[in-house]
Amino acid sequence: MTESIKNKIRTIPNFPKQGIMFRDITTLLKDKDGLREVVEILEKKYKDIEFDYVVGIESRGFIIGGILAHKLGIGFIPIRKKGKLPSEVIKEEYDLEYGKDVIEIHKDSLKKGDKILLLDDLIATGGTALASCKLIEKVGAIVEECASIIDLPELGGSKKINDYLKKNDDEKKVFSIVQFEGE
Amino acid sequence: MTESIKNKIRTIPNFPKQGIMFRDITTLLKDKDGLREVVEILEKKYKDIEFDYVVGIESRGFIIGGILAHKLGIGFIPIRKKGKLPSEVIKEEYDLEYGKDVIEIHKDSLKKGDKILLLDDLIATGGTALASCKLIEKVGAIVEECASIIDLPELGGSKKINDYLKKNDDEKKVFSIVQFEGE
Image (tube, rainbow over all chains, first blue to last red; front, side):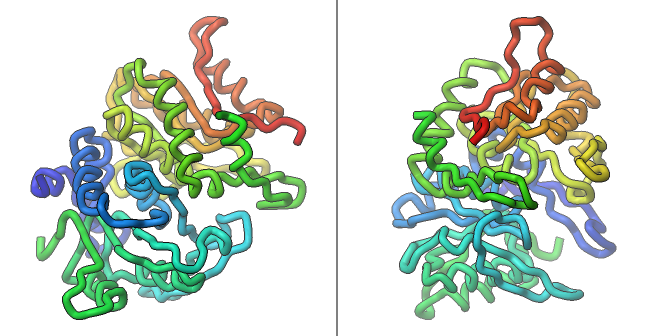
């Protein structure tokens, strides 16, 4: 099933800039079987774990994040870019290749001890996902698991996030459905 | 059920600027019963109508749009802000209070005759939703229905879109779960 999902992801060379192989999930999400299979895999993996919320990262993380929250019967909370959330926020800054970026979450959206499933579409260098983990922890909530449709393991993000989240050597806290390496 | 949904939507005065009463759905989506009820209403309304795709408008339209596509067993297609989609796009420009904005859809995402359920979180003046209808029609696809969680009828957007989409006087092409008027 994973191979058929991978085949539905389109690669666009040189987007958003020269040298980047952009993995485009729009072709996967528009395919009804592809969308269903992605949700089935994530639901199966997480249905027996107790979470309070799915937190999805703007904006592609909203699509699968929303579906998964609904399937698991829990609520959905967005992490957004700067200035988008209307009520009081907490912020986390993180480094980009050039410059910095900021993500925000509503301060009152989480409470201490809330168990979170963090969702994004893709993990590359892991900058946004790691900043999201720190943002969630700032209010005392716990990132129990971090999931994505795609991982680019060569960029080291998924390992970095797993090292950050795991409480012992054997723990695997980061999951992706498909991986792209050297292709 | 609609009243309980409305009560879960938070109003933030003066966001994003003075004089605007911002209707914040994050409090609704984080509530597991609220999220479930929203999805139930939309699923019930649309389950017997034949659509090819749900098209969701960036970025809050991605959350409920994704869930609804999954529930209806069809694919999801995003309409995004300028420069976000990686492959060839078609564009539609529309007027803002000051200046203009552009939305885009992948050119190859739709084909002639595709039946579309268009989804956004809120219809206010209807500028974005109307531009989205025109964008979808540019490739020959058909916006069969346009749905939102919230309508602000006093701003006239839902009427404008319905007038644009309806093929005869009685047709009701635009649906919202809750309405905020003079409050």
